[in-house]
Image (cartoon, rainbow, N blue to C red; front, side):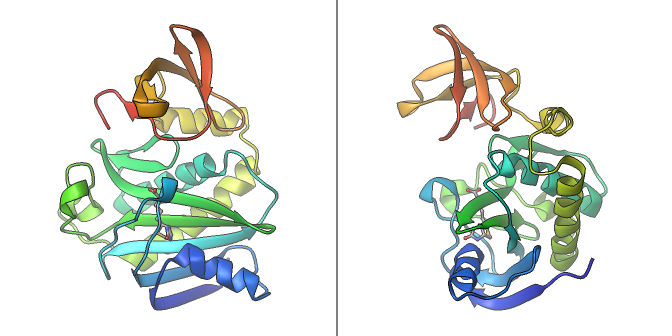
Length: 238
Ligand code: BTN
């Protein structure tokens, strides 16, 4: 596949850059990729900051013109774990609902899917060759390099990720079919686990299933519930 890749030395956020391109009326073929060597204001889910290390992290956005895809983040998680498996020639990655990629129970990558007009912007941040993390996240974050002692090629990971996204959307379409769910379920650390969620994390339950829209089905003492958004603490992880 020939991909339209825009390489930037520095930008605020590749997702924001993608939105600006769309706003300006640029023609963006599907799988247009924006990669930055450095993000000055990287964004994570729930309005958090996304930390990356200049030249050591993958920070990229992939633009697709799609309808609204409710389980998009989960489909992207499947693709990113496939790409990471191929790059590292291992299979030690798992997914923490909805957007974290873990290895050894620490966060190695995150996904931020945003809608803008008729477009879906898939923001992907991977800690590739990072060797240091800020105090606030150092206990829960890791990188491919810290995990393996090896350095990896960031451009190669970007290409494998785009390839895997295309593969997943070709195989599963934009829906969360039973086949997509079963691949996701095999990777998902939340399933079958006790989780805490809701305001101040005061609700708890066991995750029993994942719905077609990508939300978690939870069995609580008050019956079955559903978690569609927000943060979830998984017992024994974070
Ligand atoms: C998260 O884990 O909360 C999501 C992190 C997503 C980070 C990526 S880095 C590339 C793209 N640009 C951003 O500002 N965020 C995403």
